[in-house]
Image 1 (cartoon, rainbow, N blue to C red):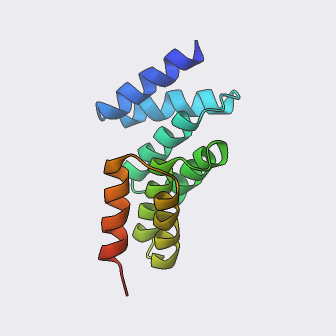
Image 2 (image 1 turned 180 degrees about the horizontal axis):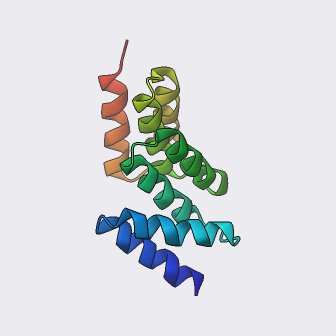
Amino acid sequence: DDDQKALMARAYYYEDMVDDASHILTNLINNGYNDKTAYFTLGNVYNKQKDYKTAIYYWEKAVELDPTYPEALFNIGVGYLYLNDLPKARTYWDKVLQSNPDSVTLRAAEEALKGTEF
């Protein structure tokens, strides 16, 4: 079942088996699996590989499915920070504050914004 495969891929990701996670998630997505957590996790895989543009692409796909997905919005900001696009990073961190995030994500976004004030 696709949900079980996605769960396995997340477990692989957390065990730092990113190639296995990437393989499973890419196959699922290519076969029509449309799940925000799958896109988010695949974005995280690409982030670990320092492919920030591709990571942002997948995090944005997660946000298309859930426009208030705070962890994805936060990660997009981080991706843009790595790409040296501070204005875009700050835009996404501002969106996190508006998305009613959990306290950990809220504090991370506040700290990111505070640390990048002009």
